[in-house]
Image (cartoon, rainbow, N blue to C red; front, top):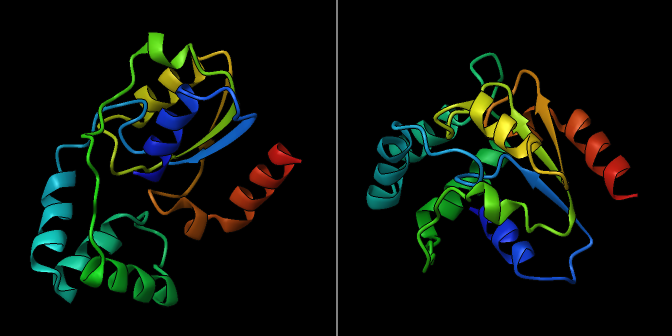
Length: 159
């Protein structure tokens, strides 16, 4: 939800000059119908079975999930609390056209949280201030799956 929150903030601020969004959930396309069935058991039961299931689902099938990252993910889901007071919704084209900040959007080739990766990419790319890039061989955890590509794109964009 971090990308959605950052985008929402940027739409209402003239102080943001540049923005980078990594696989922003609900920003450019609706959720995949499977998402709640993966997310809610991890949130409700907070046990390793459901948390591991969610974590593995967010990786592209050919990628091996990182155990150190999983341990951090597990602790966050086991002991953390999501305190989102606004239900996220897909932004309308008119809303996104108000975006003032130059924005880099990275979307995974095998993204699991979007109902349609193509629709998300097309919707993002249609906005003048947005540069949308499809990251190959990755899913929702694209910074962990394709860290060199992501780091290179983000660094070049921000500098």
